Image 1: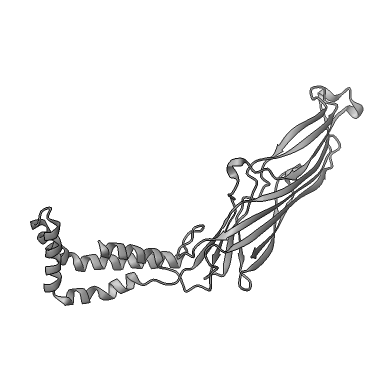
Image 2: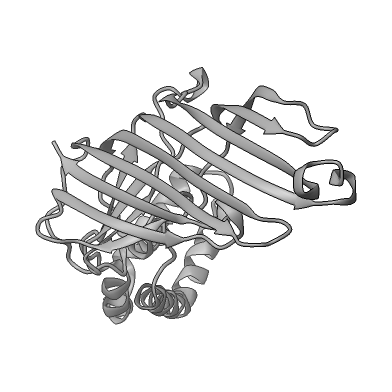
Amino acid sequence: MKIAIAITLGLLASGAAHAQAFAPKGAKATLTVKYDYSAVGQKADKYDPAEWRVSRTLTMVVPMSAEPEQALSMMREMDAGQKASIDKKLTQTAAIHKKMEPTMNEIMKMVERCGDDEACMEKAIVDYGTSADPSVAQSIKPDVDAVMKQEGPRYQMWRGLSQTGTYAIDELYRAKIADPGCFDKPNKQCSREEIRKGGGNIPVPAEAKGISNAQLEFDSVKKDVYIKLPTPFVPLGYTKQVTSNYDDEPNGSSQGMLNNLPGTLQPITVAITGDGRNLSGTQTIKMAGSAGESGTLTINWTFKRL
């Protein structure tokens, strides 16, 4: 049993190169992320022209805390080297079991003769260890040493402790359409305008206070950091004002909700510069589609150790 436990611990700790200095467990940092989404365009069509102007901004602040360093990643798949190392250790473990099989069979026979008498079992094992051929243990020592070899930790994850932020929504959509139902309208076209405006503090539900969906993990071998960006827990509200001459659409204001911006759920990986205490970066993501969903998301982020 002791051998099995030791081998398991060795497997979990293997596959990592000696790491650079990690932050102490519980160290604090702040992750700040600003999302800017912009879509401006028009559809130049004689019969169904359209234009749009979309601006959405979110700024989120996440206090973070360092977790203990780990040999294996909590956020990413193992790389080829790590998988090869574990496969090798499993092969070495199988070799140990094979070499130990005769010895274990002898011990089991001695233990079985004791029945449920634990004192008898302990004495039998001690007696066997005293009289056993030491060459058996010596023969498996290289394999046991290889399996038990523990290298330094490779990863350190930072966990978000909470999240706050602000947002602003400012959107305009105008369109005309030539339709049989619009023949009595100017130029035989129906027209529609929709304006969306909203902003303020990003809501945090009571059940989400004290947590964050943001996570960050340093890899001291690849010298990079993997970031799961923070996003609002709930949709963001705005006021929608519609001006339309469609016969079946009422005019006036109503409330709408904006879900997460496209692209904000995509983790990012960036190289570590310096000692990793102060990092920053910019990512630009082009969104495909028509009208307001065809735009550019710009993500500016900073990570600062306190």
